[in-house]
Length: 255
Ligand code: MG
Image (cartoon, rainbow, N blue to C red; front, side):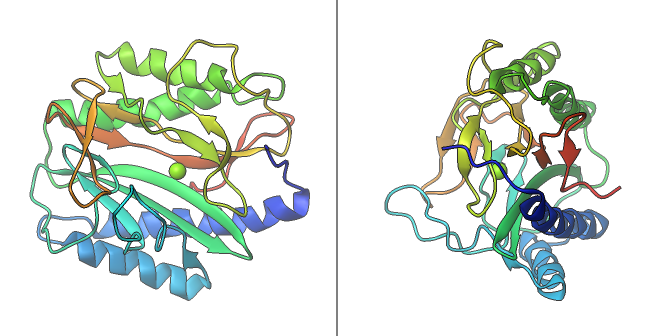
């Protein structure tokens, strides 16, 4: 069931979203060659603690047989698509790193992701980051009352593929609210005019995951980390948005 949020609930979600946006901005400032993904996790944790929020991802169940998720952020480097677990890896000049995180406060979640450059990166890597971000903004042009979910999906896919990149099929965006993952699913591919109709008060996370190579993925032995099958680079961009009478409201982006 798709839960339509009241204005009071959306107010709570603005606060959770603001905290996620703030933590991502703090991480962006800290990214440089030499910093470990574990240190980035600590930065996110400090922001959440200061703002009275709890990490959404910690304790989530992964694929069968894996341990519950152990960290505040997902830190996915280069060919890692999503769910990279923070560790002692020190970022290197030329890496790209996708940070995905959620925060819960007053019982409501916010969820967002960005891909950042570490120092000087290749032209292709920069293009990938830019196209991934722009595909989100292209997609949410269709996030309007009366449109269908796949109108967003189609716009994301069309934009990404026009640059010769591919969108990951096995993981999709989702509704957000009291649960981190609610209905509906929001794929980043598909024909327009399908899926549920968008209604005022729906809150969804739109999150293109884009590869420079093919869209196929593998999952590492830790039961969490998703990598590109062909070893190509991958980027991720996500915000939690609210469907309104006009333009969608982005909850997790602080400029
Ligand atoms: Mg998400």
